Length: 124
Image (cartoon, rainbow, N blue to C red; front, side):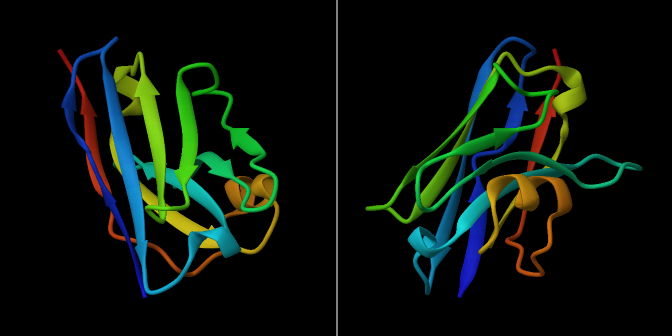
């Protein structure tokens, strides 16, 4: 049972990048899924979360309008499309799941189950 984030790398400001969070050993359809990030010296921050039931989403104010979260049940994977990234988006991005609302998940990150993160660096 694990989560694996991938797709990180170096991207220029204004470019685009898509992160993937793949689950194995369980179905993401039973959970809300969230993307979080942590930059050096900063606390972990909820970026975006998506519901398992109605597809509702939650975005941090800092990424709203630039990032899009989506899920593919057939692939048991959740994506984070990062458009127009900024240098302040540089961080290690990780994913988690929980059976709570998307707002609760993104704001309070109650889960103890985390996948290994992927580094995103936004720089010219």
